[in-house]
Length: 125
Image 1: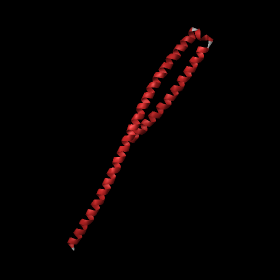
Image 2: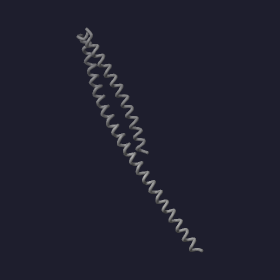
Image 3: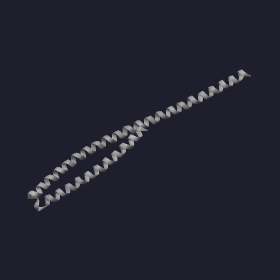
């Protein structure tokens, strides 16, 4: 049960990281487009726009760094979900094997009990 809860939690986290990653990727593309437009502008040479460009490039670099970190985190989460899923699958297989084994033992016990009851009845007659 705990593994199932963890898998659900990790799947939610993975979804969240994917959404954040896509948002950041969109921000990155928007910033790139804005930089391209600024470079084409005749006013690129002014100090104000150069400062803005520098800030946008810094923001772009920060977005790239965060994007890389998010991708790495996403890969790690996906690997963890896969490991937990495999572990859960193995646990379910073991549980099924134990259930079958318990049923077989129960059947043997019932047969033996019936034999003993028959002997007991025969002994009292």
